[in-house]
Structures are given as structure tokens and as C-alpha cells.
Image (cartoon, rainbow, N blue to C red; front, side, top):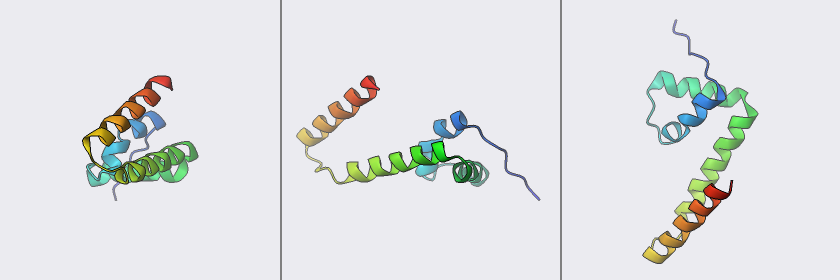
Length: 80
């Protein structure tokens, strides 16, 4: 029987995009999934990231729209 290592919030956040993209190995994916099922703070962060990706996917992909979106994201990251 294999046990899944417990992760802290910082470890989960560092691996969140790999988790969402399905790029973690099975054991690591399961450890992140277990943490997310028990941690409401991290679960909220995951929901935000999924919503963000869904919204980005709806943006028209012409060069001007991409440039405007990039600037908005960078501004928001620097402000927060």
C-alpha cells in the first residue's frame, strides 16, 4: 500500500498550473488533489485559476486583443 505525501499550501500553489495541465506524475497529482479536497483556501485559488483560463479562452485571438489582455494581466499582477 502506497501512502500519498501530505503537501502544504505553498507546495500546492507552486505546482498548481502543472496540476491543472495534467503534467504531474500520478502520485504528485494525487497529493495535490488530496490537499485541494481538504483546504478551502487552495480550493478557492484553483477555482479562480480555472475561471481565469476559461475566460482567457473566450477572448478573440487577434494581435490587438492579445496585447490588451497581456497588459491587463500584467497590470493586475503588479497591483496585487
